[in-house]
Length: 169
Ligand SMILES: Cc1cc2nc3c(=O)[nH]c(=O)nc-3n(C[C@H](O)[C@H](O)[C@H](O)COP(=O)(O)O)c2cc1C
Image (cartoon, rainbow, N blue to C red; front, side):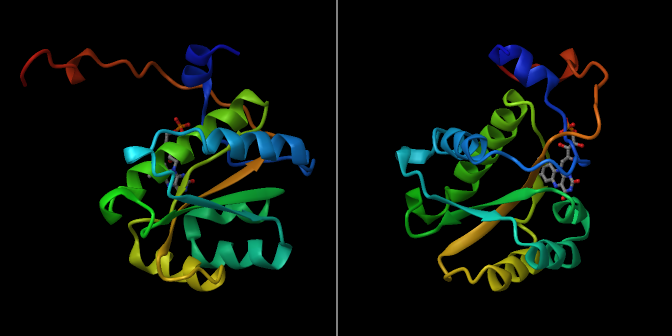
């Protein structure tokens, strides 16, 4: 799949088959995440792989909009290291870029995934920090359930010429 096709055909996939994800595929996805751009190339990210059943069920309780984590064979929590990030603040943008790379890599490998936001919701951040035993400087940013897709999605045209401004508003 070429890059443009991948960008245009990726959709949020929230239903998965029970087929497990090969370790090699997961590692390729995490490798892609680590190739994301980051401010001053600080790469201030950590990735927590969640495949434990009881943990997955706790996520469902904690984050009502991420219930599909319990049905996905694996999820990745993208975390930012405040101490490592440029000016201590750019971890949010860096983690967004890593999250996007995970979605695109999963899609390229024939898998389905969805970005579930944790940051900036304080309650979710606190909940995930406790659940995953995160040190204080490690901030949970997003959780991404990944699995073989059990749904197919298209979208309507999204190109909107009204959103494009040349040289000034
Ligand atoms: C910051 C952010 C937070 C999101 N959080 C959730 C979420 O908690 N649960 C969910 O099901 N989808 C979540 N999404 C996915 C969006 O709903 C989805 O990207 C959007 O509807 C567009 O659909 P598409 O991804 O198929 O293009 C989130 C997306 C972003 C960028």
